[in-house]
Length: 500
Image 1 (cartoon, rainbow, N blue to C red):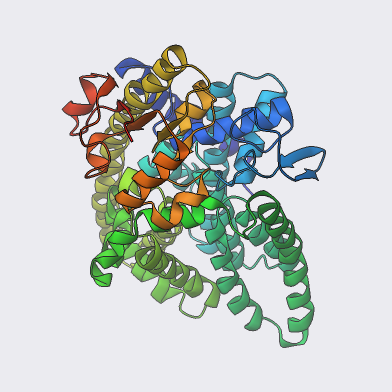
Image 2: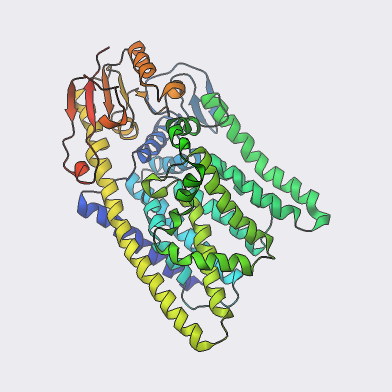
């Protein structure tokens, strides 16, 4: 394990790294979240803490109910599977329950997760590469300053929690910590953060069957027990909330971006697999190949890399999106980074000539540091832009709706996070997260319009270009008129008066 001194060094570095991104946001506009989805988690968290209900909006009391650990999950119109990560929403709810300001609590959780990921990465290198016995935690510092991971830590999303679980499982396998009861539990817990965590069963099972033959059945039982408990609870939770084994978001996202699956598969896969290369990761690519080759007899290292490739392939097939800095693929990135860093240090150790080793270390290491630092600063600017966009569009619109539209007015909207948090009324969700009935026809604008007519909505809130005909001819009631969105190639969110 790491020394106390190195743990403190990484903790201080984490505070500085996270603090700089938050400062960048404050200097550009103000503190906030870079995604409207983060407000969905905040809404569920606040409602769970204040009402004891797994609900997106208050006011509806009909439907079946199920008591979960003292909390009531209401069915019917109250309950919804709009949170893909129940565990993350529950952790956020703890902050509301103990009365800690939600911004501070959310950022603190993200910072702790980033620090834990850095500690895990540093521990991995010291275990897997014997020659890596450097005094200072360079690998941990790399993780703390890798711009994708810092962005995720202050995004208000579950991304880094899922990343930590994924990385823990694959690192434990690689370094030989193979307590299959624990590994099964971690895979089961990952489902409570993202359904994609089930893919971790692949590497665990491969390593299990290559482990000691006389313990295979015992290990398989332990794995099944650890995984099965959390899987059963997860399925029961979703069935009670939505009547389906997975949250609404799982089905809604795939339906919303189905058109992207028409692109050539090889193109979709390439776009996913190259996401970690945007930044210092591009200089780690040779290290990845060298580490996999050098560790070719370590089945756990090999299946860890195969999982990375397979995860990219799954997203290429099912959900081929790369927006928001590849946030869906960020959880796989630390495997690429750690395998690459391990290969880099191993390659340097295998060079016999001290002079060549020194020259390569200075050139490669220097370039890596420069690129890492440059993208850290670029990432801070991206983060500030993302927060400003959400604050000046989604949050501004939510405040206007709350202040100008009566609470009994029914509206339909595509982005529901800020609306749910700052307005709180029941709405029709065009993205299907809390209105799953729209998922089958969410991309059919004629059917969508007929549905909105049936529901007798009065206002429509969207970005104009997101639908071809839905807002055609509708009078504009409100437009944010923010100058920021057009500057970065976006558009202003608009409130339309719905006319059947």
